[in-house]
Amino acid sequence: MTGLTNCSQLQELGVTLNNLGGKLPASVGNLSQQLYQLYLGINAITGSIPEEIENLVSLNNVDLSYNLFTGEIPSYFGKFQSLQGLSLTGNQLSGQIPNTLGNISQLTQLDLSENQLEGVMPVTIGNCKSLKILNLQQNSFDGNIPSTLASLKVVESLDLSMNNFTGGIPTGLQDIQTMQYLNLSFNHLQGEVPTKGIFSNSSGLSVMGNLMLCNGISELRLPNCPTKAARKQKRAATIKLTFITVLVSLFIIFATGLLLLHYKTRRSRRQTSDADSALNHFVMVSYKDIHQGTNGFSSENLIGSGGFGTIYKGVLEQMETPVAVKVLNNIQDKKAHKSLLAECNALKNVRHRNLVRILTYCSSLDNKGNDFKALVFEFMPNGSLEEWLHSDRNKSEYGMGSDVSMEGDMYSYGILLLEMFTGKRPTDEMFKEGINLCNFVKAAIPQDILSILDPAMFLPLVAIGDRGVVGSRTTGHTGDTGIEIEEMVLTESGRDCLESLMQTAISCSVDLSRERMKITDVAKKLTSIRDSFVASTYAVRRMPERG
Image (cartoon, rainbow, N blue to C red; front, side, top):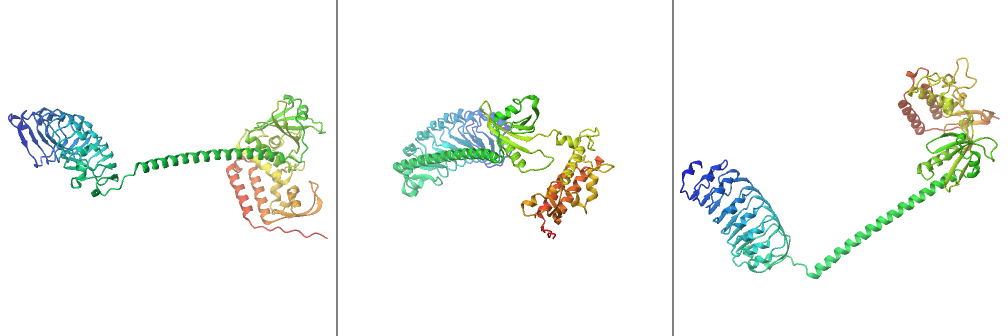
């Protein structure tokens, strides 16, 4: 190509079907200024179309078809006022058609088919008044077919097939008298097909593959278009359906809101009712009584406070001894209601010498009109459970001045378990001369486990006819609880359960901290004991009465 630059009188260059390959050199722009025919088709030329071709202003026909050109169509083609034919078909060109192509007034043939062009067709194509052949098939054009195509009064062949055109067919196309071939197939066109001009000639017209087209000449075999009345009815039905859908959705939302509100209100009332019913068997005292009994909730009477309540020491007229009054905070809070209900249900049936007893309650309004709820307990002046577990009277690391630790807590937990099952305090007078609660229990397991059990553990057996899942008893002598007990008999599952629990407690309260069970192991062990007890098949037998 470079060697041809010296041919100053060169007017026509045709090297079609020579398999040149490679890129078209920039030197092509140095060819003769008189060159008006450039035929480079079917040569496997790659790369983009050189910008230097812009220098060949006399070009009349350009054929670059069926190569491997990439990139966009150069806009400089619009400067070639003598250009009559431009064929770029069968390449890999992309992008949109330059608007400048509409400036070529002498253009008669434009073939951009079989590329990767996209976007909308420029309306400026309608300015090419001399255009006879326009082929844009097999690209990715979209949007509407521009109505300006009706300005191509001498066009003979128009192929827009295999694209993504939408909308209706411009009715002005039927007025082009020179039109002999029109291919609009395989797009997304819709609406009514005209019936005049080229649209009356089925041999020169193709609209197949457009599923939304209707009417047209009978040879096209298209469905009938809906009438205006049908379209109006369909539109009305669509509006009606939309309205009903919105109305139903709003109703569902409204009904759901009402149900949620009703549920929350009912649940709140039920919580209040449950809390009150848990206290119904107590004699209720008034806010005034509690206010006076605690000296107006004086700080001098303050004993302590917790997450849901504050505790005061006081004296009520109805009581002969001092009481502890727990005033519930945040009454409207759900957690406070649950705390009140749980505490009431837990304490109303509990009877144990080491747990304080609930005496009465108050559910009223304070002097500001706010809800007021309080629980009244018997006052125990001997400190708290924590003080008993961690006092210096108890052989634990805390009592000997050690820092707070997980091992120290495990020791206290083990002592607490042993006290629960034996009914013996670690400070009981019987524990002396080297004997403590832990050794006392260890010596009795497993043969004499019955002898160390707190008889109060068998109180539930009275309510179920002297029989239970843990064991049974018969009446005879009087134990520490004041209940006559002659003999207690454990079921096998009950004995295994209690023995495992006491062994766990002993493992928690050994003297050497490094030998105590870890808290995670204790949790797993207790869970295992519970599961084994629940899953076991047990039988309870009654001891025969002694005659």
